[in-house]
Amino acid sequence: MIKVLLNKIQNVVKFVINLNPFNKKKNMQNISLEFESSLDELVALALSMAAIEMLGYKGIQKQIADYPESSLHIGVGDPNDPGVVENSSRMMFVNILASYTNRTVNVEELIHSQMIQLWLEFLDQIFYEILQLQASGNATIKANELKIDIKKLDLSQLGTNSFNNTLLDKALRDFQFLQYGSKIQTIKKMVGANGIDEEKLVSAKKHVLCRNLLQHHKGVLRQEDINGPGYGLGRNFSMIGIDKKPQVIGVGQRINITYWEIEQIRDDFVVLAKEIVSCATQPPHDS
Image 1 (cartoon, rainbow, N blue to C red):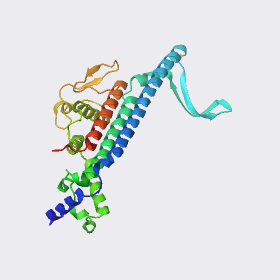
Image 2 (image 1 turned 120 degrees about the vertical axis):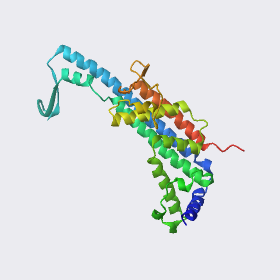
Image 3 (image 1 turned 30 degrees about the vertical axis):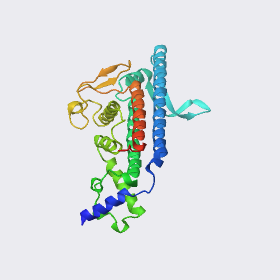
Image 4 (image 1 turned 135 degrees about the vertical axis):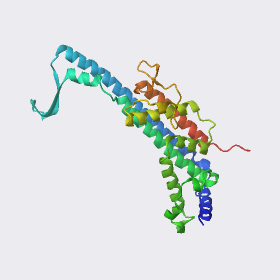
């Protein structure tokens, strides 16, 4: 019985949307352009914050040189009486500089994390669009690969738009919970690996790993990150240093995200996004 239902569901998946799949090219390109625009905003923010940090650092150094015992006063006061400051927070500039110098998190790491999140959301969006294209008659995803729970589907709606949307939404939820490597393999399977820069895929994989290490392991590189399953990237794990030169990171060392790394991953993401969209939207070659 379940096998029969799965076959029926598979037939529904193949004809969910009655359209020419290549009419969706503009929509995918818009997703890619929005992704690129969001990345540009984050890169601009990273550069702005780097400039503010640099100017602020120099300004504080001068303040300390001129007035070694001076403090920063922050609070809410009476605009008519500048001498009155309520709820103030006072910290000596020398301590501010020490705290900044010894920090374990920088603005670049926070922006980097947002860039990775944008990349993952882009993959989700593209997956859904590709699935709709393939559902128009070129499906390569089998119903039993979508982890469909027959008992939780309203089979009385089989063949209706409501049921079709349920299938697509279920597929998207499954995709969102996949590990990163499985997500990329799924996308490559759906669009074909030809035309997608493998070196940039490795770069993206490295940065997803970096984001996870910074969030869950204090940014420290582990042995399994070098040659273990899943994220294993090989022995040479390097990051771009503040001098804009590659620096090899060894096991037990902390990853540091610099502005130059932000620029590099932005460029890699933009290329990958365009390549994925191009592969997903080009007409099939005649056999």
